[in-house]
Picture 1 (tube, helix red, strand yellow):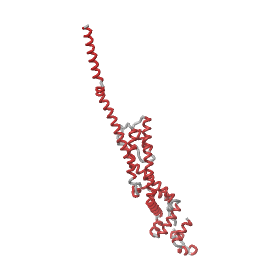
Picture 2 (cartoon, rainbow, N blue to C red):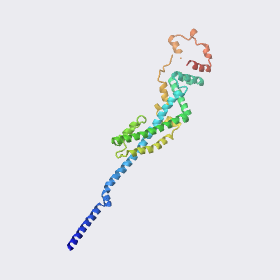
Picture 3 (cartoon, rainbow, N blue to C red):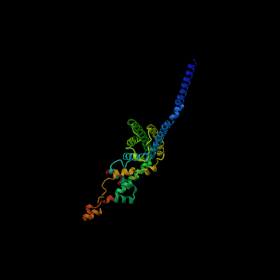
Amino acid sequence: MHLVLSICERANKMITDQHRLFRDDNGPVIYVEKKREEYYSVFLKYCHGATSAVIFGEIICQKLKEPIEQSVYKKTARDIADEMRSNCESLNGNRSNLEKHILKTLAEEEDFDKYMNYINTPRDHYKSFIRDEVSRYITDQFSVSVLPKMKRDIELLQMKIMEAAHESTEHVQENRGDAGLWLKSFTQQLSDELIFSEKDLSGVNHDYVEDFKLLEDVIKRELPAIMYDISRRFNRKTFDEKLDYEDRTDELLIDHFCQCCWIQCLFQRDLEKYYMKTFDGYGEIPDNWRRYTKQDAIESLNTYM
């Protein structure tokens, strides 16, 4: 009996010690302690990736600021040129119609220097006339036509950028791609709207960007503030300043109307010298031509042109 009890006590002690050892080695605290480094590594990677996505998204928005501004101004300038060719009396027809209004303006102003400019350098006079018409139209119509167009264009552009970000995220997830693929998809979708490419972000590290949904959310969150900052600076003065020379409304219209022959006809002395004859007798300029009034000249433009 004593032997049996002794064996039981020894077995109990051994089982209890083993259980305590197992518990100490495999308890929740110990288990977590053992896994701490592994979990910390995963946590750091997650934080690093999340931080990279946020920073990358914010940088993209800042890089988009100038291309967005350029796009809005250029598109509005083109829209105004089209609008003037429909609504502006002097520019809503062909070159003959434009010339009629130029001659009418010359007759009304009776400015000799402008007459000579028109006779000697007609192309320069046409350019000057078109620039004056455009400047007057934009100034008069800025609040009722130009500014609403700019605000409409920037709203449409914001929607397109957000849509491009969303579709790029879906594209990367479907193809198990990386940040490089996301950026390529994003810039390609905006290539018709913005002068913006992957090269604009060539110096920005995006190796740790893995949360593309977060990247998309950052762009959607930051973009409205960028758009507001651009739109609040819209005014008549910046409309010309922000455009490259060839993108200005007046230059677009000049390019449309002035691509033609500008060689002047021989207006009397050259003809007389060439033929060694004068406008005398039957060829003499009628005296009644000299009696036409300014109003007669203006009315004749409407009749014959």
